[in-house]
Length: 338
Image 1: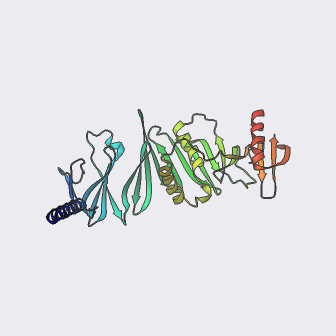
Image 2: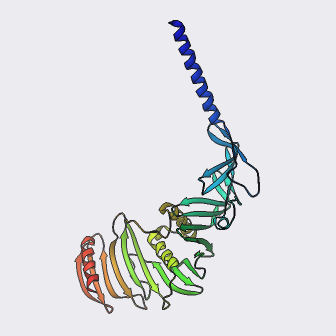
Image 3: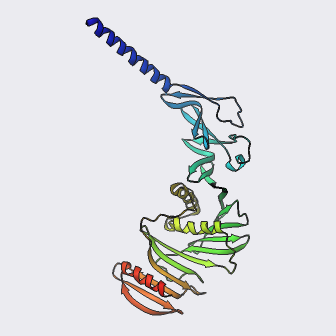
């Protein structure tokens, strides 16, 4: 009986030693990968060494079969990342990693950083740690487009591959953020942010004031006589103001970085919005060539009281007390009668 127990214990011991040895081999394993090719270092395969289950030395592929990058490690620290230009690779006979980027403190410092999002890939281009420009490659059935976002002096320019004569320009004028849809040098459409407390508004505009997810937003729209508005760029123009909180955009760099992060967080840019709650309407009116209200309806609210005003031909035709909640029905009735 004692001999049987000893044999069982020895068997268990050998099993544990084998499992430990196997686990150590997995943690400190060496891999050879031939599923990718690096342009500057063509090889039959690329070796990577794991230490304690983590990349330690060599080449390590990240991603899936259709979208991937390769990191190069030295003593457990990522040094380089190899990736590809999506547009160039679309016409290539084989995928080749033709872009080399440099890491610093675990982040891309020089070169491209690629992020897979819904229906697309975001490519951020860094120069000495600063975001220089970024591109959004959008894929759908029988459709491809590339949106390019870049800074040019005091303007952020957004262009797209399918409609090369159109672009959106985002800039500050008179302490207001303005987004213009341009066809070559002609402004077709303009939007600018408006404060709820403003007493003077943009000229010859349709103004909409509302509250969305606790954020106060205001947009003034201007459309030129030229009605030939690009669909893609017009939606981008609209999305900028539907997405960004302009009260927090203190400078161009902040706005530029926020645009990139917004695309990642929302898993896209030109997308349908899913509101947590329907927007709360505060005002909807037109202005004249001096920025004064001509026609429309507006709720003026504060902690003490709220009133609403209806304008017609530049004059207040009705004014009464209300609440923000009650004003929603007043606004709906007003729109139905127009």
